[in-house]
Length: 389
Image 1 (tube, rainbow, N blue to C red):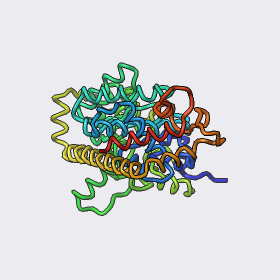
Image 2 (cartoon, rainbow, N blue to C red):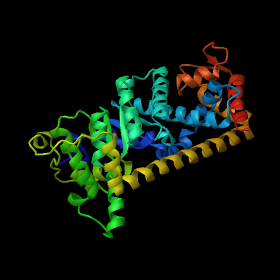
Image 3 (cartoon, rainbow, N blue to C red):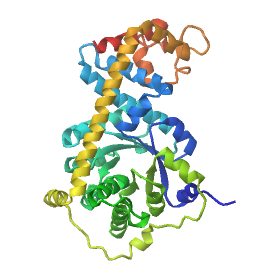
Image 4 (cartoon, rainbow, N blue to C red):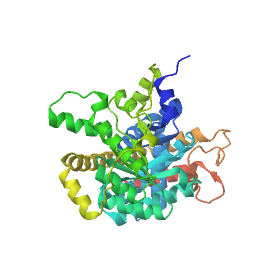
């Protein structure tokens, strides 16, 4: 029986699910998963994940206390939500999950380091191994320096929004664990700027860019992994068969899973090591100059940061609206949530019955007796609502 293109791809390349939808991850069984603010925002609007959203809001309010500002609590709730999705993903995939630092910190090295530490701390407090988490950071010069500092602390990083070889080399020299060059967005820019309607897969500018990065890394012995991302069509993916990792959206995973035919390996480390590729040193001066000279990379990096920042603003608005909904009928919301988790109907929710994270359970369990009562549930949701006032 012939194998699908997806099954053949998995022989050469680690397949990563590019989604925040846990159901899709269960369906396609990738090794790793990665999310971004847009994907988390989309998942947070799905009814099946409403409990995760409510739990994040309750936890943030309890964690910061009554004196915290709404803005601070909403930002912390997003971190909690991202980690809660990540924890659920880690329960499904055998490998790693990437969790993104607030894109609005992309040019702030110190704040990015602190946020990375905070996110890892939240994962570890929930019992997750830090080796299974990648902190996702935009590939600005400041972001790359933050990644270098985090890697020295044993916190692994995924450098995203990467469009140029100069960014890739700087990331490798910083010893980042992984990079995510954006194949489809590179294609988008070239289609728009050239006036061409399309490119053959082998000539796709995004494919060409990732191939060059992969070969450079293997030729010069860099350990940083290359994970192609942001695909527009299946042809881009098959042309990169053999890349260390590829992160693929559910729609394209389904397309590859249904397609038959031979899939030859296109990228090979042994072949790359025989190539003549001159080394390039990328310090800050060189990075700034090369970035300025690469109009595509400059425009797409700025556009990507802006887009992810807008997605975070949208998510904050969504959470604020959720608080209003909870507050409009907090007692009813509490009863509904309580009924979901009180599996034996004895009037208490034990830790064994609770399907959420330990951090949210602990936030609701006011007297720390290992049981959540209806009044504790109601108080938790009510406190979260008052945050929005």
